[in-house]
Length: 320
Length: 245
Ligand SMILES: Cc1cc2nc3c(=O)[nH]c(=O)nc-3n(C[C@H](O)[C@H](O)[C@H](O)COP(=O)(O)OP(=O)(O)OC[C@H]3O[C@@H](n4cnc5c(N)ncnc54)[C@H](O)[C@@H]3O)c2cc1C
Image (cartoon, rainbow over all chains, first blue to last red; front, top):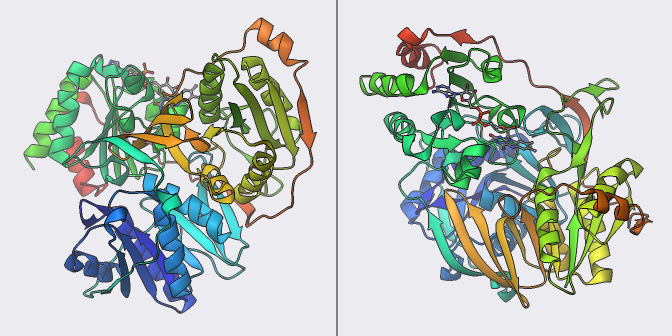
């Protein structure tokens, strides 16, 4: 009957967004009078998995079959479905992410579960099972009732701030039968930046637009990001022009993020750009044009030249 | 090769979102509807694939008669024919069931759609359809080539991308830069008028979620401007006032 949380790994460690999902799931479990179980798929050591207890999971099911080492939304959905069956779980929580999305959609099909994506608050159980989710790319919210018996909640980053406690989760090996039909995609090449903060996971983001004039000028953006421990992002034209890789592109047609801090340098603030970043907690805009529309959606603004301002900010951060 | 492209009819990206009827209904007054931008990428790639002989492209929309201008535009861009399932697309599972029912009858080799709709941003439909049809689904796909019965594609992953090979049939959620958006030309617009658009009733009415009300986010407080000469104070403010660093 427990609430099941699909928790993801990145290089053997629980992802930050998954820790938030575990904490969220434990709160849902509390209000349903049950416990939280995390299902973790892939290679990780027991000590790491036991830390799920800090965020409220009583138990971790660990599926470590070597066929599952490579992230695979279809196979993972089958494993999570088996875990939900074993635990009798009717509520599954996932953190919104590229793997989480792929897994959750397949799982919804398998379980005929009502799936609410981009959930931004704990469920309201006073009148059915209702959640608030972000819609129209952050421009509105919909109060949504999940009418099916089984429910999947895909939560947006920064929905809840985990309060850690001194506890460890028990770790159990989980080895359901795997279906060959889930392993039909052949991965021929993977290119992934290592060592950098993943943009969808990042609490702090430094983003830049066409105002940077060319890819050769990104050093000043990267320097500030490095000083802050932030991820880098960009506007659509910047990725269209191949100044930056596409996975950094935020907005209506790019990644939607909700970090604590979003610094936009040399970005005009078109409505389609705002759509991807409008749920950031704090927005800083640096633009030489005092009329740039982005200032209307900012918390802090500096009218100035990015080539002057960014290096000075980096210096100020390094002096902290 | 038969390609099905599923498209949404959604408010233009510049729309100011408002609600009526005590925040229970989206206010359509004065709103321009467009093909979902991600669906537009899917359609553009399908039309490019049609340059090879023997490829047909069918457009599918689950929606009311209000979606017909969007469907006609897809035909003008180069799809051969269209199907509209006459129903409000209220729930991802419901829409997925409609697509799966049509796919079962028609044996498409490739089912393309946007990675997500820009109204509800669920990004679920391709995965659910895949599950209902027992077919692989992949999203978000940024590059797609077909070689016989093999698809060679690239999908985005967090912090990078991944090249994959898979056998048709497949269901793909698409995004840029899979193709450039296409604008219909005059000839396309003329021929679109006579291309077949079949309207069919929905198969079943399973919905698993229901929207009970809407809300707008609170407006952001006013912006605090920092003079360029004192830019460094921003860092102090982020630490002591906003408490984010
Ligand atoms: C359907 C659709 C979807 C879209 N999706 C997205 C999306 O997902 N993401 C996205 O970003 N855009 C998207 N766009 C594009 C969007 O409309 C804008 O064109 C884009 O965001 C502009 O990018 P930019 O701000 O980098 O460039 P610009 O609009 O060219 O702005 C550059 C800014 O830099 C400032 N500047 C120049 N030099 C300096 C300097 N030295 N110092 C300081 N400031 C300087 C200028 O004042 C200007 O404000 C979409 C558009 C459509 C139609």
